[in-house]
Amino acid sequence: MQQKIKLPTNRNFGIVFSIVFLIIALWPLLKQNDFRLWSLSISGIFFVLGLFNSKLLSPLNKIWFKFGMLLGSFIAPIVMGIVFFLVVTPTGLIMKLFRKDLLNLKKNKKETYWLDKDNSNSSLKNQF
Image (tube, rainbow, N blue to C red):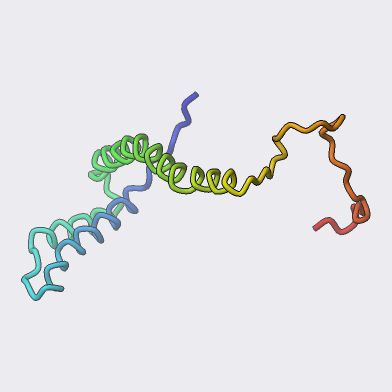
């Protein structure tokens, strides 16, 4: 089952790319170099096309969106793997080192695994 994902508007696409190319144009000024005229020109074109929500940006918008989906399809699992191995795994190892059993998974010789609960605060009034 594949969800239909809506493309961003051409206006947003044009303005975002205008800002990106403006940053590229002005970046050399931080190191006392000349600004990039070609990038400033492209920034202006994207800005004008973005303001008028031009249909000329539709093919570029679709290509950029598909590139983002492709990139997300293999970057997300890599990031999740890094989070798992840098956060979850060390936490589990530390818990084993200190012999913590937060889920009560260790076998015991009790008749039941049910836990007795103190119901002194069991009023359902004002739950939130």
